[in-house]
Length: 615
Image 1 (cartoon, rainbow, N blue to C red):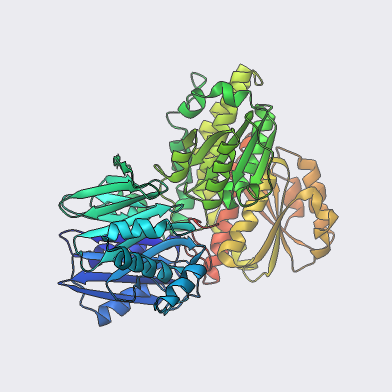
Image 2: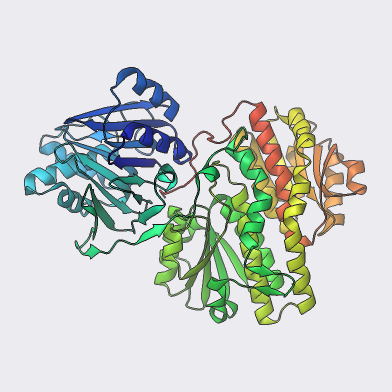
């Protein structure tokens, strides 16, 4: 879950690596470090804390020149966040320096073996073990750095993206990946290395994405040579042209990335269906579905695997697929799926959902499903990501970069893609009439404008947040299509404000959670006119009779719930299956404003990272 950056070329490395770390800080931010090479000397600075702390420490203590540099921002796995455990790590000789994202699972046995050969260790990390293993192989086998990295990695078990530098070979950086993403930016007489393309987007739009089990020697004036780690086979590099631009990864005048991304949802949703949906002609075009329509439409069942917010999008999709396409759907936590010996057949279709396209648990679920013969369809946001390459087919969301750790626009764009997919299958199977199909498309086309209307409640929601910012617990209730939205609303509050919150199907409240309700308990209820409205009103009355504080998300013009609730937030009316795209908006804003009022770091909440690349 860490971020790695490297540069080798003709520019000063420090500002490039530092800016890159700032852009990758969403991947981890409990410690950071940079190593710079200049005129035969390797200088290293690292610290507990954020990249801003590292910047202050470096500029007060180091000469910052040099045309080679590597940097790291950490989400701790082995060893607590402190200066010693921070990356980069030296080998015992001081010749090699490494940065690492991932986990070396057999580090303990390797460490014991290295100790018998005289190696000593300053940190508690698996990474320091790896760099010393590479040095040991290099010396013992009398090989170059690239070969030493390859031999060492064949002795390790786990996941990694690494960059290794040898001060005796100042014209190259050796990189490798297994289970963690790694991109190589290719410029004019310069190269960049990073966990994703954001650190080098202003310098080049050409990138090579290493595949699992590949390593590369990045050499000045000689280009990039890629080999398979397992058998040393040469791989022809494929250079991708990046679609990202610099404006997309800046805040654009907003106080936080999260707020910017909440407000980007109207354009993100329209960008996601643009070119795929032609409402006037009654057409949906999705190449990944079109090319495999028979396989998907005749699936015995659809299995959706995902984690976190993507899992909630999958729960919404379960309702949509079963309602429209009449295909049985099961939604699984990817983190549990592979460990319970699931029953998967060749007649199953597995849909894997991930914002980053790098989620380790989801990647593992994909590999298991493919081994069992299932057809795997990916839904992710990042072009060229691991999941997009590992699946048989798929569809990108077009949310643009999502930097805030608490996901917002990824959720609504995932639902948009999955809705298009369900509608296309329903049309193909004949489970929806032509008139209903066209009506769905027309209503989906109106959603971005309706999201804008929902965002107009921002100031009203801020006032509600001010009243409940000191609550210690909160319940979220919804039914049908909006039950997953209740789960997502509770997750958002937990993630960024650290207030305990739970989401439930509204009908389940009286089967236990109702015992918690008193005058101190705020209860957020999604009570739109479409879908079980009368039942939800009854649930609200049960809360009211026990003096719970009710915050209700209702359809414009609602009267009945307004008379019962303490606070009402209105969203525009739409068809029931599309209400999650609107009802989630006020819940995102409510969590955001509460967290800001409590002084929390909204974009980088404690203990979390954006891209979870370890299991």
